[in-house]
Length: 139
Image 1 (cartoon, rainbow, N blue to C red):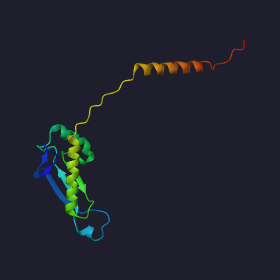
Image 2: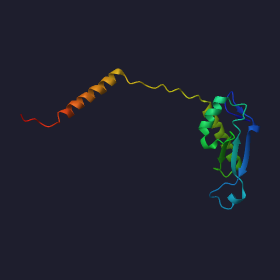
Image 3: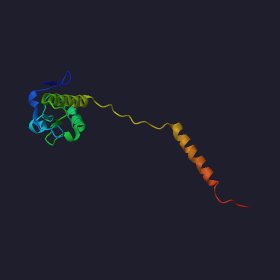
């Protein structure tokens, strides 16, 4: 069981873990041991996540969100299988915690009347300067 916050806990049956061989340097050991973990959380089917949290999680997860509605995380940072599993669970918990926070609604700002007046005055003044640059009449 993975505890996210006071209201949300993820049951073990919602998470599947598969251990795969990690790429990169590591000598002979990397070819023998499956230390990388691929954690799959069936978010769309989870009864513990409210719908708004699922929608935000989908947006936050990005390409880690599959067509079936699952979040897939791959971790191969450590040489230890147990540590990689721990890191993957921590990342999943962090993603869900972020999705739980409701974003603040943006209130568009408005230009004050004084600022609008100053802008128009500056344009008029600039126009007058440019108008005086015409040909000089010698008469």
